[in-house]
Length: 443
Image 1: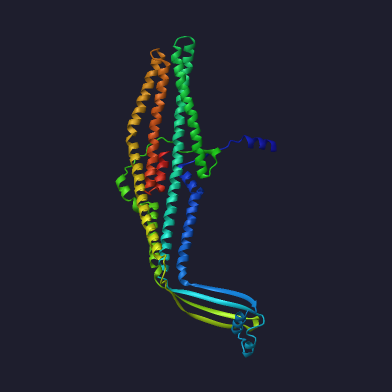
Image 2: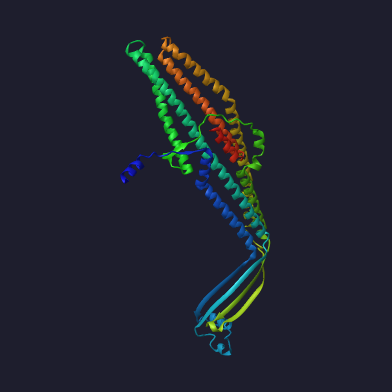
């Protein structure tokens, strides 16, 4: 019984792991280290904001120190702190005995006025949270687009490989027939070997295409955490994706819609806040403080005392102030220039993607017409060849031309789907609805 079970187990087929586009995107999101790091950055930014908000509460410290010595000033001071000083202590003030002291203290300080520093730190913290949130959302969009790109590219090459196999099999049938005619001397050898050269070119291209497809599937498996040995695409490239997209409107809204651009804009705000902090660094700072001390030579005779007050720190002369302020202002200006450059680059990326999408849509009809004409040409060549009115070389050339036309057409289909997603990604509109639309298009 166990032997039969073992034979059944090893003979059982390994089921392929079919994956649709939406599932691939979902797995890529859960498997992305970049997205996880962005979410940790967001958590760190939120903690930084809490830290800035709590600086106004001040600090409470406890400290304890044990000392032992006969240095005159030390001995005199500790005797006073312990409440043991008397007129007899004056007799040995120049040569005191060794004295032990344990000091315990609670010290607290609360800022009253910091030259607007705490207010600016809170603003920086709030802006930092916005930056981290924008960065996390942009990273999520990038992971979605990359997974969709890998999926579409693999689907495109799989379709090309399917069409190429059909062309190779069809050409092989024609060549087998021509081989018999060539051996009987019924067709010129030059035509036959020229046809073989075309056929060899198709086979060589198939090897390259199969290798590229395998690499695409490996990349997709790595991105999604799937097992490459059983990974299979459930979607097939067969339909164009045609939508009415207004490139000008999308480009106009980039500054307020793209999360990375919003993050760069917030970075300029942080640079301005840092410049403001440096500018205000010569304003006096005021804080309230208090301390409670306990000194003893033994724990059962603790002598306590306290002190409290208000202090002001007023930097009247700081030679580095001007340089620090100029440096902060220069960095703020640099940040604004960086934002302008990133905004221009974002608008360029969106414009190119949108234009490429529209070009692909416009190229659908010519590409389809070319494919149909190449197919008609091959249909006409075959009977003429069988009637001896055309050479086998011309038939193979027509087979190759038809495949090239099909490849151009399916490349156009691929571009309509890919550039549609890329346009939405660059416009920060790559949502689940868009992914679903492409997935439906691949069914």
